[in-house]
Structures are given as structure tokens and as C-alpha cells.
Image (tube, rainbow, N blue to C red):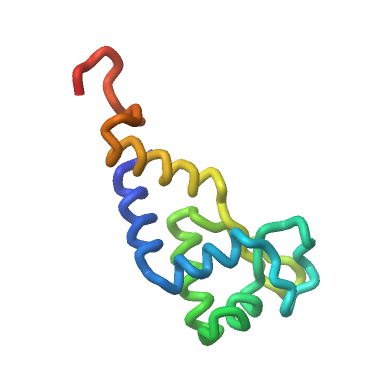
Length: 117
């Protein structure tokens, strides 16, 4: 994973509203406004985010687009609804990168093979 994208993802997650939105998505559909997300899917429509966070619709959409830009969420249009879902692969990659960069006992993701560092 590119160093710049990791920093962009961490910057996106440093915003408390964005972190909270990602937590909502990870918990699964809150079913407040969108019947197009099945109970087994982890995701929310913009209206769900507005209802759960108290953010205005434009602000919620702005935060969701910021998370989408750094690949932490994916967007799907389902009829008149725009639904967002967490991107587990990207979340796992940023977590693994943090672990390898900040925990000395963890193997480094980009460490040269056979090198000392």
C-alpha cells in the first residue's frame, strides 16, 4: 500500500464525524430510511447517517465522499438512494500497515527481503 494513501486514510479517520460514520457502517444497516439495504449488509444510506449522527445531509454526504475518496468506503446507487458500505480490504490494509510500521515486533509490509531494516 502506498505511503501517501495510508496518510490520507489516517487523515480522513482523524475527523471524529468520519470515524463515527465508519463505525455506523461497520455495525450494519440501521434501517431508518432505506429498505434497499438488506439486514446482512454492512452499510447505510445517507439518510441513515443523517438520522444517526445529527449531521446535515450536505455535511454527511461530504464526509462520506471523503471516506470514499481514500477507499475506506464504497458507494452504490440503489434506485433513488445512495448507499455506502465499508471497504474491509482497505481497512485491513491500513491496519496492517500501522501494525508493521509502529510495532517493532510485527513484520514490515515493505521491508526488503534479507535486509537488516
